[in-house]
Amino acid sequence: MIRKFPGVRLLLSAATAAILTVPAYAQPISVDLISGPFGTGSYVLSNALEQFSQNPDSGVVINSSETPGLVYNARFLNSDDEARKRSIMAFTAGINYLARRGEGPFPEPLESALVIANYNLGAVWLASFDASLREPADLKGRRVALGTPPQILWTIEPMLVIRHGWELEGDITLETLGTSEAAQALLNGSVDAAIIGGYANPETGEFLPSPQTVELQSAGRTLYHIPWGQDAIGATIDVGIPLIHANIPAGAVEGLNEPLSSFYDAIHWAAYADFDEEAAYRVTKLIIENVDSFSEYHALGRLMSPSALVHGWKPEDFHPGALRAYREAGLLE
Image (cartoon, rainbow, N blue to C red; front, side):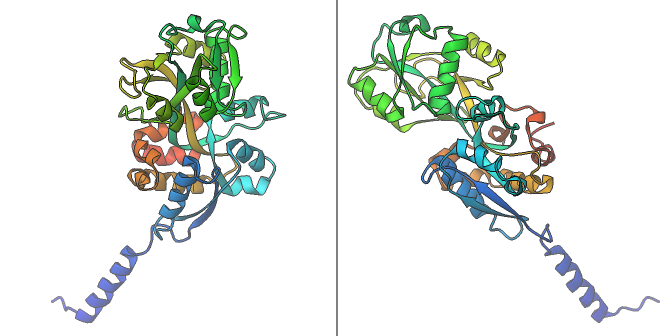
């Protein structure tokens, strides 16, 4: 005969319930996130990630802070060994390329950073109000306005495509004015073409034009778009510059009546190899689980999706902890 002990059953049920409500992680890991200047997409989306980490079940506590910019982030972490072990940063593929080679703003080569997750994919190209400017060769002897000299996406990468892809370095007069200043220069006729662009979700085709691109669209004049060209992007990639082929969909910007061949620079959160693997796993898992909620914090968050988090990268480009999270989620093999 089996005797029943209600009191024991009650105790066992309470114990089981207690086990089931224990957080997945017994001890949260503290992570510093250095983002970008106040008000930028990097700053706002990084702060959103900090907010998500306040869930007691996340297993990680993220402390996001403003920085002067993404070049600063690499310099800072490479000057502080302890900070490298506990920090992730807002970064781009283009900046990492220059840092590895010790070029541009980096006086000496730095270790390559490893990817945690994309949060934006930026695309740029040249546009003009002059209907005769449709192909790269049409720009010979013309004046073209770009961003400021330190800007990777808006200045340095376009210059590299002009050099390695178009092979027109020296044939075009390049003026590094700034993004809004470039738009103004095109509007007042002091240059023949200017850099425009924005941010995209490559999986859905959704595109969000940058502010100066919106300004040019609102001028009431026809914009003519000059594609970089797939061959030019390929030639630039072949010399080691980490661009991603991009086709900007027709209608993304006024006057763009057919898909345009451009490139993406992956704007992402990154860490160095000595960042804790378990911390990288938990941060990446948190990003995946909340990817649809970034849109509540910034318009650029609408462009984030599970597949866009890993777009353009090979498995070996990721931090081992991040790679584990993506494989677990079925986003990478």
